[in-house]
Amino acid sequence: LKVGRRSATLTDFAYAYFCFKNGISFLNEDHWKHQYQLSIDLHDAAADAACALSDTTGVQSYSQAVLSHATSLEDKLNAMFTMVKSLRMTLSLAEAEIYAVRFLMELGEEEPRMSGNPQLDSDISSMIVTVSSMTDDSILNLKQSQDKKLLMLMNLYHEFFYIFQMMDPSRLSSVSLRMVQLSFGCGITELSPLAFAQFGVVVLSGGNAIVGYRMGSLALKLARNLCAPRLISSVIAVVQPYLAWVAEPLQTITESHQHGHTLGAQCGDVSSSTLNYAWFCMAKLLSGCD
Image 1 (tube, helix red, strand yellow):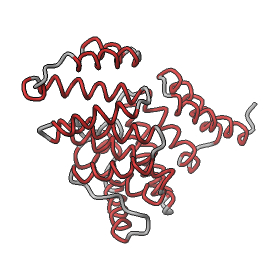
Image 2 (image 1 turned 90 degrees about the horizontal axis):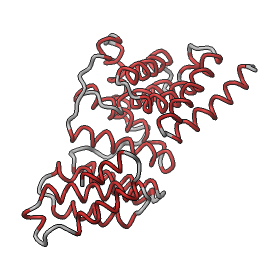
Image 3 (image 1 turned 180 degrees about the horizontal axis):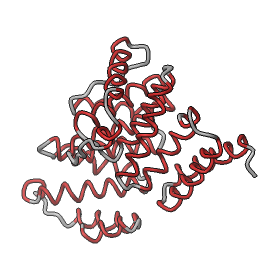
């Protein structure tokens, strides 16, 4: 387990997977009874490594073993998330949505609502009022949380972003709202800045440019406060093309995308780096930069 985790930290997922599978094979026959925590840790780790290697069968096998034998909801959280992430990564989006909704309800949440839902519109308006009534400092100084259930909820909702972007965009506003509600009510997590940015897009699309742009600015400041370079790259890819144009010149937006491209490349976030580079080229063209 230790060697495998070290290998995974060094991004050698193939060797990590090999170690975790060997570790599982060395467990006693009654390991779920007498080696419970070690069994949970090894199966979770094997599922994570299998996900990184796009081994959907392995993810399903090890995650289902955890879900079948875990004695608490907390012990099931990683297996739940890994199953959804693996299905989304292999573009089995309909199945990923089914599992994500099921796990979301097990965690006491409601299924994301569609745009146009009167209660959703009312909740969005209430959150806009809440944000408008708070200073930037009070929002940026919200407590951080390491609660496992909260972290898993934020991760699941983040997976919904990917799923709904391709399956049902009308539910994205509900997802971003809920992530912001959790951040304000339960504590800031690493995904909170991205939630702020996405909610800013929702607010701006509803006609409130001032609050929408402010949410984007807060998202960038919060990401920097959390000292997460990889996160900053993904936040820039949302804030600059969709929100920053409200108040910033194209030349500034161009420079920001170039910075996001560099940060993403340095941190191994290929998707955010590539997306920022595409926006950089477009902004550079529109701004008339050499």
